[in-house]
Length: 431
Image (cartoon, rainbow, N blue to C red; front, side, top):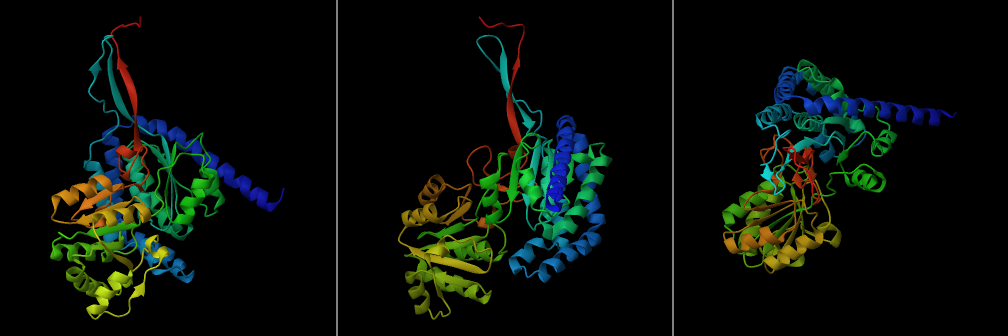
């Protein structure tokens, strides 16, 4: 047997072993009490704060390696764990503790004509596989949500964050042990071999659902090769439309935040659409803010004329590709549109069904936008950056789904559960 075949066989055996242990642990997690799960989460939050310095030190090993490999600024931003990032992980855990445990909840029982009572019980999905790149905080967020929702989880982070993910996994397992829960309920795949992903996404006997969090190449690969069902989103091409009836000061504040608060997240605005009636009033002030912050502006011809008339230079002509691009960088596409219909048509043609917003004081226009824009999150007078599990009160998110089946938008506890019918009888028989 060649060395390559031996290595592949070892990967298969390793992944099968992880899957078997996860499946066994999932049964214990399904029956775990809310008190046990909350004890584990609280203990993990405590460990994260206690070991914040160590987490940063280990994370810097990953960051230095990524910089040496020539990764770009957006990638480094996603990889880096700051004191604020670490505290946010702990706060997210505590918020999840405060949420109601969905497992075992029964919807109102309804008596049928036969005499039986029929309801639905919320139950875990079982074993969830998470495949993600660069963001080590996903290790904590994903494990916490899976734990609280009674699932076991297999985590396969990117090779660039292997040191950070390994340390965080150790803290999670300490928390599980402290609550007398199986440590195999959360397992991190420690190999950086890409073939582990190929094995993981075909393990239908062990994994119930895959949640991929990463770039287009990862999602495309999984869509082509996976046999396990997925909860996913491919792009975050988020739009904000400034309506003719918008409050100008509000529009400037919200659109500045939507683009520049952070460039790397998938809920950052990538395309700004502006009604032609308000463009001369709002665009010069807003685009000065963007240029002062170093944002490259890629504009359509009408927007270019509006800005050049106001003295702007260094504008780039937007191409067809720009409208289809998730930049994750200080670059913004801007288009001036005739009305809300042109704005919504543009979103329908180029959007990714992630998050889109309208800025307007016209309630009729707002209602149209809410009804007609077919995205997982649709907003009125708010920054697209709010499309986030923490901001939605979910404690954290395991990912954002722009699919329509099972889960949509930020996926929190309920998105990691299913429903089964339960029947309460009194000796009834079917006639």
